[in-house]
Image (cartoon, rainbow, N blue to C red; front, side):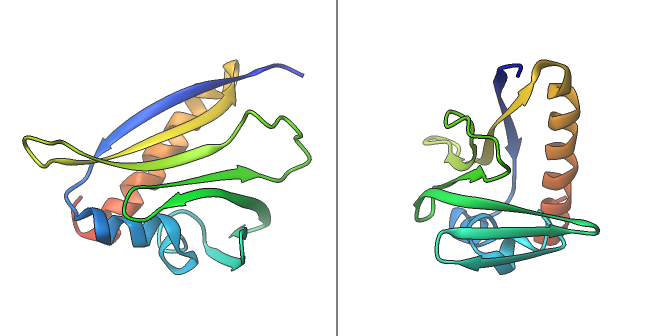
Length: 129
């Protein structure tokens, strides 16, 4: 199997870190923009789209700051995960969402576009588009 490559994206967002955290860390928040529906049992999150569902384990969470998930799709590569982090500029107080994810080399552009679409949905939900 090809090694997956890590990539990072930054999305400026006009919203408070507290509000953003609700949207990236709770099933109800995530189902507003990331998937059609999201359920959780403890650390296990189920993301549901039209005709598919994927399970992810919540690896870590820091209130108001970041969440880190790992897809449980039979890929036992323990080094891959996806993380959504809220970054606030010390001086300007501008808020950005930093996304870290992994994809195979020939799928990175597609993966980036997917995130761009999803973050654009999030901005619409937040009214900051």
